[in-house]
Length: 454
Image 1 (cartoon, rainbow, N blue to C red):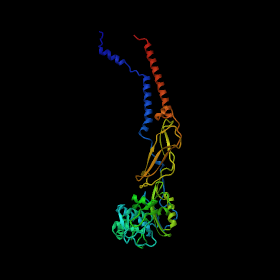
Image 2 (spheres, rainbow, N blue to C red):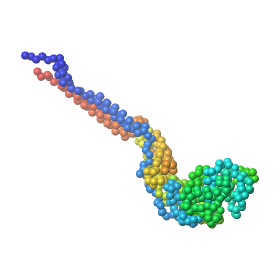
Image 3 (cartoon, rainbow, N blue to C red):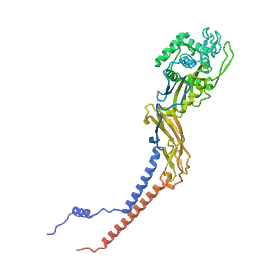
Image 4 (cartoon, rainbow, N blue to C red):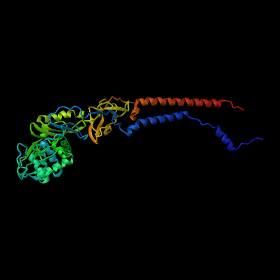
């Protein structure tokens, strides 16, 4: 009996016999397209996401060491206090009680700025006008009226003794009460070896400080921006008062230090050529510090700060940030044979983080995307160095090598090398697809010509 097949069974047999045929040419073209897309994406995407990388942290090199050899200085007592690290990095009899002389005036002027309106008019008392032998004065007369700010300029720039008394009386009502305020203020700052008996530093056995205490006092006083500005003012004209004409004055600090480079604030004091003092702040290549010299000479007061500043980086623990100068980071190059160029810097720069670790140093870079051709030494951006969240240095970045123009794909940051590799891969894939497709066709053709078996 002959078995009959249903329509469903016939379709099932044909479906089972049907084989999936791969079109190798289409597959090769699809793979080529994928390679092209991935090549462009992986070349261009990093550029779209950023303009390069930050500094290589491995370039940061430790520098400076506490206790390093320092030069001999004339001052009997001295200190160099790092404001970056909040610690002394050099000392010489720093706890010996000494007379401060006119550097006392920085505290008087600080308290005046903190407690008086700059335009407040103050009247000179008989006490303020008493004559002080051989001291600098405005030579005020009783009843003479001056603005507080003008008196502060006079006290800081020409070290006018009578100006400080008027300021003190203007703040507290009397000189003695103001002196009490001075002593309470420095005690609050932790200065246990300091005691004042007047507003101006006039010589007195009970008027004393130490280099360590004066560094702390200097630090706090010059946190007042207006006082810092006044301290470095080269020339100032005090307006006419109700009893005197205009008065032109020049900065005694700048004269005594011979316009010291890097000076940020300060004040001089003296009783004679052999009895001088100075307190000053300076900033140099990322390092900020205060120098206090007590019991110095006029000549030493000019030379000693320079000697200490010269070795400041050797005495202060920190990091050299741009010592290598080579390959500190890199940036992108459009239409170049290479898509990136290494960047260099010029000159040494330092950083002094409070934690004394490289992690306390941050470098922000602003790098340009360059267009080929690029010449070695061409400016390619800027960098900014931060420690303790404050900017301490900056500089330019320069291309570290020549970059010639690349082929057409380099407009999309695809390098010549990547183009060659991708091109070879594409040719091989297309060739393989052609060969496999041809072999597949030949097999099918041979199968179709084969005689059917009955």
